[in-house]
Length: 374
Image 1: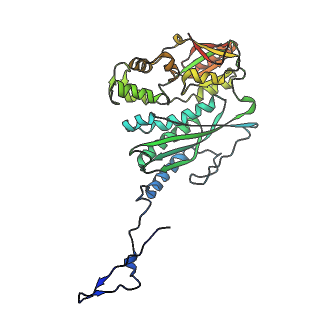
Image 2: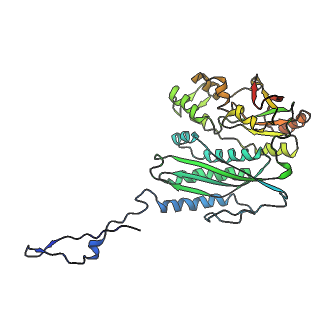
Image 3: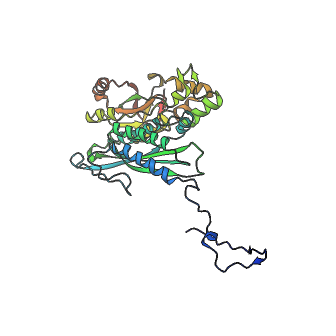
């Protein structure tokens, strides 16, 4: 309810003498400047236009299981019980973190949408799940329709590539909460797996082999430290070419988070994996133990793969301890598949046919549930 106060004033008659105000003021005198939501910083009209464009992008990801349009109070999705006769739903939510700061600096907003989707897809795929649908959340101070559309376009394309539907989300205008030109981005994914096909790591045995699959770079983790080292310590600009990186700083940081869904499906369909770990924040040190059973540990050989130049340069710039590097960054390994020794030959053949680079980086041992390095 608006608060409109009537204003009363004395007036002068034609003779210049004071005339008492009328007991009732005119409608014009009662009027006060109307304040709208746009005056408070929220442009509903602009938001509506952006949402119409988002709807078109989302519809491109729809399949026969999507039963609702974008814009309802909730998205509707029919689970295919022929494909999942004994279904278990698997969910995950995540964000892109301070990688967004680099996106703001460079004005590159397309790839962060793919980063978000691929990160979430990997998190459920390592448990054997197939992605079903995705929901995004984008919050900003003042809505810039072209930026929002670009971000959602990246989300839409990544959803299509991973076979999941973008069935809803939220675009929030929050004036005063974000700096001009900035936004936050998060997403939630829902997938499904048949109960007897869930991969938890419970079947991991001592002697199983660790196969490491390469990352594209930092993916979506460790950016606070990386930005400090590259921009504050080394004083590089985001457009500066750095010989040690063999690339411009910004381009090296903005490489897209890989989706491992395709290769994961090949390995799980062949029944050659006993566990998988998506290497994100916390690196190998903290992510691999999440799937290792009690009474076992992992021994990882750091000489078994070559870390990309970005990681080596970051370590040199900050004189960062190796232990700190390994618990902050993925160090060039984005996914670890735990393979029974008697299935290693088959697993390697599958990866070779898929032209997927891989390295044997260690094995499962007896001991505490932690990673040791050699």
